[in-house]
Length: 350
Image (cartoon, rainbow, N blue to C red; front, side, top):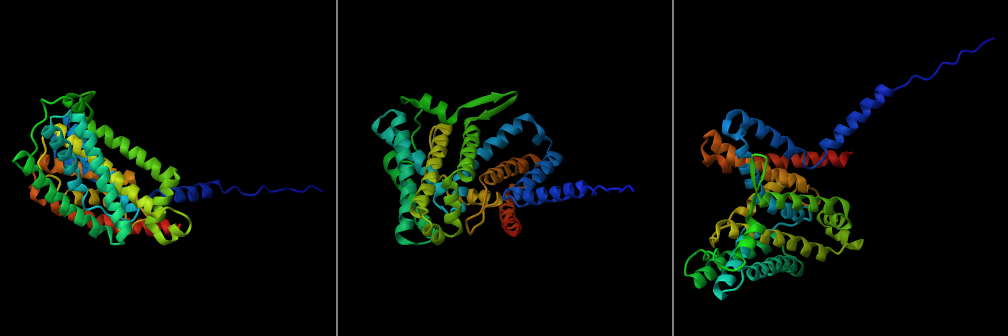
């Protein structure tokens, strides 16, 4: 008597569908997903309504506008993931540029001496913000708001005292100027697209910060401090050191941005930078950073900066009234906050 053995039915198709749904859920739970979708939508919109937006020349301008925001949005995003804000970031860029310009011109020094002095000043501002936050226990919003007003007044007062005007004196005839300009404000060509050096620095900052956040112990510390600083301290995370380091990272990038402004335009206005801090924060929020800390993406912050760059140029090329740009900022901030909260809930549910 023969016995027929029936092989079990294969459920490969079902397994594939489950795997695909799991992959889709994983992708949709990433912090930067909202900004990526927004970037695609905005790019398609302006490609459709603004013919000039499609040209090769527009690419370089979009990337440059994005880079000037993105170089600061990256460290601001790290700081927000760590649960803190820096409202002095915009004027700190100006302070850095003015420090280099005024020292070099007033004492007749090589421009590089001023550049290094500005680096010390910028790192010092960041360290001071972090130290004061740890020392007082005040919200970083209040601490850096005080720094914002102090730097704004000092930028104007010191510049007027030293130069007699509200702008620094041009440095283009001083020793070291040409090499400094090559480092901080040079240009290069890729095919038919003219690109400025901040685009390269923006890319480097994004890659380094992403690796630091996702592949190192320091990245784990940043998430832990932003999520619950008391619990992080209880398991041995150096909370105070992490905060100071994050503020100093903002200071370092403010130095880079300040040097670019100085050598791109040969001088710098003392009132420059006011209001830019909100642009950096909004770019980070659009990129997936929660205002409550402990969650976010550096890549998303850079995409948020790209959205700004595309929108600024796209509105001009489309012939729309630029007065509506701030309305766009407000709408994007609200939408990004809602999307980020939704994505965070989905990620927590997995």
